[in-house]
Length: 520
Image (cartoon, rainbow, N blue to C red; front, side, top):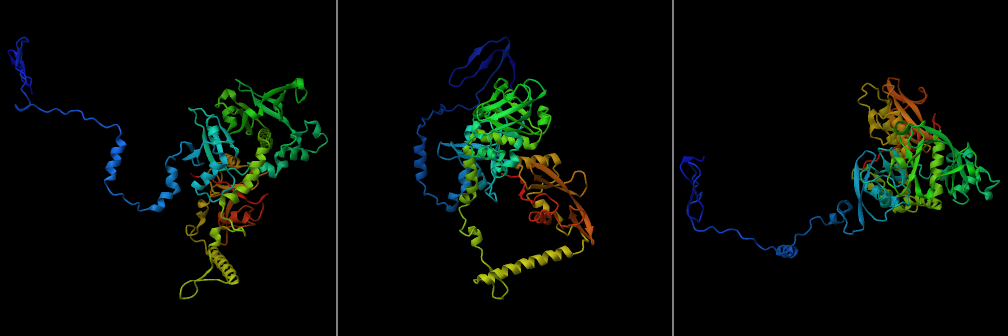
């Protein structure tokens, strides 16, 4: 604490004489904090060499090098992929899975969607190589588009707005090339017409084949609802899709040149599927899609929102847009997709078995001396049959046990299966199946929201999603599941799925493609 006394105040400076200054009648005395001592040496600035790397090298070179205790990890792809590559040609992109988790991936400047999908398949340790796709998703606008296999990913990303929430999503898509396999399902005859003179007299089937071969292109025509710009109203207009572009008729369905109005150029647009079009845009139906310029950031005023009467009509229009725009390139992509699983796996043997399967050997553990390798092929097949029969006997014994304690029976085995999606709603189940491709046999199982302890099998057939109720029932004191009022009983949902993967039963088609959610 400082004391203030009457009289003149005094300042004390080190190395100088005391001076007095009058300030009224107050005096402030400041004594030195240290005792008298020789002059203090002040710290001086030290010059730092600008080339510090040489100093670090010389410092580190004075110590012996430490050997790497885990040399096999130096070639680990996980470690390499987590660090930025030395080449400046690599770029970092973020890809989301269907569980909303993301993964950052280093790709080259010219990497295509097919190459990025192959990289993600290896990174995520997916069980198969087929039918993977990269989606371009605009969550706020409700737009989704499957990138073509030949599209350069960075070029697509360059068209995005920096402030937007656009993202890439890695998922299954079984319907990407389904129109090559079942063209008559995707292109109804009522929507196909011959616009070129050389196609006169051809049947609709021949026109479709020409369309798929990207030779003489027929014309896709039909009514669509279009959202008028700056208005909430929708108008029904007759559209024509030709190689030269998209047109609409100003007078009914007239094709006369004076009634045709040019709408868009195919080379400068992308076609998107609209999710939840009723809520976002007030669409008259759920089968909404839109077209927008491909080289501009997404803006609401640039979107041409269209709505079809049913799913088949929408699929026909979106598929035709792709075929008319990319032509033979799409056919090449389809051929590559069929050969990709064999070339990517690279471990198939001539007899169709993989190297991992060929490395398995039959063993006999019946003796007391330990196991022995069965060399005789006939004996190995016999051992395989006996093992299968023993497994069936164990399953039959498990099923024959009285159902005294439901907790003892593994009835929750379905929760570990990729086709089980818990308590998702009917609408969400349809969206999941639609997202992964409306192909025959696509299915999932979910819990029923209307019936307690029941499940629902959602199955895609002819571009429509059908829902079948799975009801629990009891027979002989045991609990079963059935879909045909007890005529066919299943001990659990896993047995139900395995049965219908081989037999149609009451279903229109066998279960083929499970709708799975990919976690990156």
